[in-house]
Image (cartoon, rainbow, N blue to C red; front, side):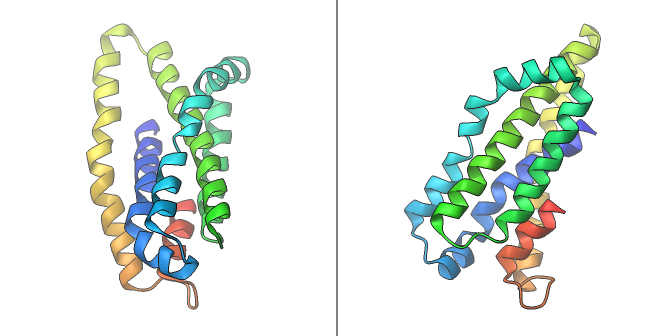
Length: 166
């Protein structure tokens, strides 16, 4: 289950690169705007891990990870509604906060609740999904962009974010 969440994280994070051209055209964004949006997501990975793991310890990893996954899903789906560089940046910052908290809580969960003899194998499987996610994300985004979205009247790049959020 945690590997599926991690896979979705990488698919979601990399989707900005797949939709950069149509998104830029629709919103009038520059390459600098897209680059900043791609990088700003990692602020959450810097800010959230320590306080997030303290919260996970207090409320329980299952509840904390579930809440973060729901928040992350909502933020991703809401990214389909961005209409400017500023709203894209905000969506990416919020995404980074949710993803960063999820990543650190999952790593805490794996190292705290698995016997030491199983940790290496579990972490290997966990990180193995990174290259797999590139293939899945590219195929999903390519399909949705080639169809110009699955929802009539909705741009393909918006469908990518909406589909990933769902």
